[in-house]
Image (cartoon, rainbow, N blue to C red; front, side, top):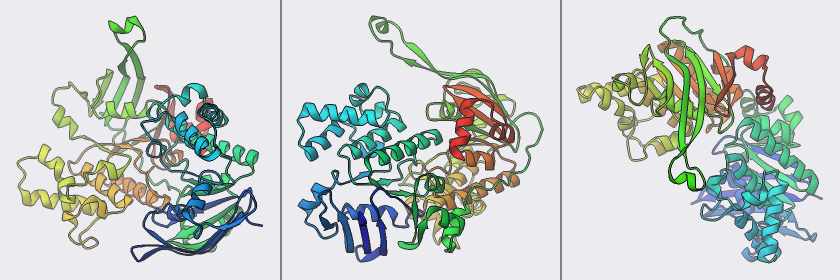
Length: 531
């Protein structure tokens, strides 16, 4: 008998149907992956099973076998009954632990609260249960981590705390909504291994919501593919990936980044050059000594690289490796020791002629939605750099420059009527990232610092944005400093690779050499985790 049997599930908001007549089942101990792009309805489907989608109108049935063997329809039972099922029989891991965890309470208290509410434990018993649950996820020093607030934990530790909270009551079904999207490749593998081990130990079933096909290959038994709120294909993972029947499934499978980059120019000077770059921060010293002086935390130690004109240097490493600090130094935003030059000119927060150099080095951030002001129009966002670097430019010419650069990134008024007067929320994630690229290009830079430019995007949109960056590099001769934890993106884009760990460049060289024949065990682990 199936643990969960969904028939005819439809979801509507304000009379508009977003999920259409879904039917799927999940056996005890089975791992089913629900895959599709953003907007396909997969997260709404998972939330609807627990009736957590606010304002949704639900129809159909979702029959669930409870712990006592009773058969209940999750879409029809009274709210009081469903509250007893949530967290105890069916638990959920949300996509972003930093927003899902309460920032005002230690993570141990948040796990203990579940045990008190669902299991009726005393405060002391619940706290010990929380520590044990954190220990079961493999988090180091669980007693100390239980007393920590979410902001004091790393991304992987916060995700483990979310898993501990979800699994505290040993549920029969776990809904995991993009549980590894925000994590580095090695952390992703750790979380996958952790979920697989806990799933084997407890016998629970897992409904995994994701757009990461590599994750599906490694983890799931069966896969169901959603497009536009409809289930277009489902079956065993091996069968669906080897012989996809639907065009959309084939499109997803074929969406791995493709390498199409021109060779860099050997001209001098380099677009950017660093020699012995070091970045450090003051940190408090515990005890009486901290009253009189501060300690120093060295975030980047002795980094050296050369970015050739028209070339790409990829920087890869886990969170905390120092790659984002190196990017901020490259943008001239952090004081540093050592040498840093842009087109042969010294570069840094205190350098003379900073404004002229700053025009040559622009940035594209990770999340296009948070990096674009929601109160500014497209014309204001894209043209802002011209107000700083070419303040005397007449308004008509500035508007024409904005139109030209939007056309270069594939956005035109024929496709989007009234484009210049639109706001960021009116565009998809991939289109917003194109706006962010246009904003960087408007001042005609020579170097773009790309900080995880595709990690927030679906696989098909990621492929489009990487193709755009490759085309712009070929046409405009741009140089890219690419910060990412995605080895596939490095393979598609980079000429040279720097592997960072604990603030140091552990290994560097050509992309084929470093990723094809890695010398360091750390690099080997990164490459293996992305295979």
